[in-house]
Length: 249
Image (cartoon, rainbow, N blue to C red; front, side, top):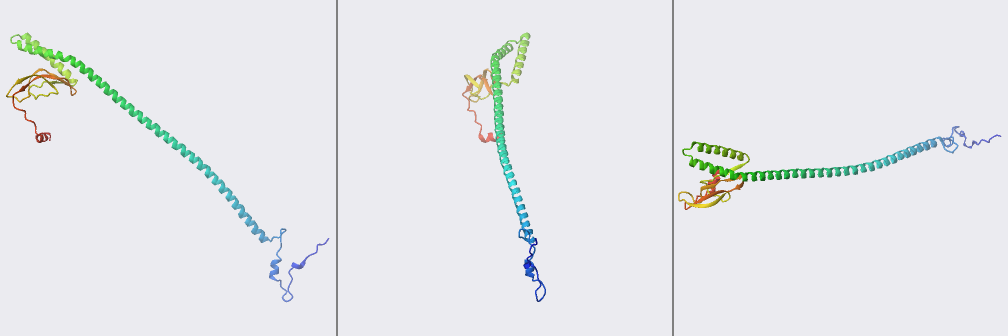
């Protein structure tokens, strides 16, 4: 069967020039099966490619945005965990410092209490030894007063004096000081007045005689000195503040 050929689109020469019409030539460009020209197909393919590329880019962008959000959540969780860990570490460190301070205070308090107990024990022991020192001093004074021609008694007194001196040296090593205020101003904080003596040549309230020596330990009076105090003399001049200031310079 023969297919009739439609030559209506066929380019024919014009009667005058024998040349084809340009407009007719353009209109007569070959068509595809879809009724599109090759140029239209190329343009359509380009548009389709651009759209596909845009879709792919959007998918990639959405995927990256989702990953970004996921990492942001993980980072936020990690920051919260870090903050909690830092707070816990700070709390533990503060607790450790408090415990350490309490331990140091406990040790200091314990050491002070032990030192006080040692001081009290030493003080009690020394208080018990003081009457022995008093007896030794009285024995020495008596022996020296009666040993005019008795060499053995004088030698005995010297022996007791040596023992007494040695005992005072031992006590001095423990911080014990002897209070022997003869000739010094009377101090009611460290002296105990047991009598008064009239003496117009000495300043008033001067220690005249020491009946019993006193003792001080670590700045504390453990026994006051028993003394007699003068009266009837001149008032002791008070030290001026300016003189005291110059003396301190």
